[in-house]
Image (cartoon, rainbow, N blue to C red; front, side, top):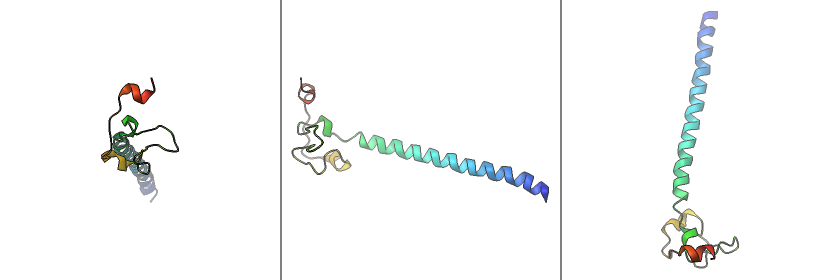
Length: 86
């Protein structure tokens, strides 16, 4: 009976560690996918983006800086000079 505990306990620990590391890998993978999706938001490169936290966009303020803005029909690319204030 003691031999069963000597073998089963380390196997259980390794099983828990394996499940933990698998869960961590899945969370990291999900985070990477979500981050790539969020980097598709074009608001900061748009003419109508103000940069002010009170009114982020003059055309669609409700969807500015959200995932809904990825396919914004009113997106108009801003020039680099106009967007940086030079």
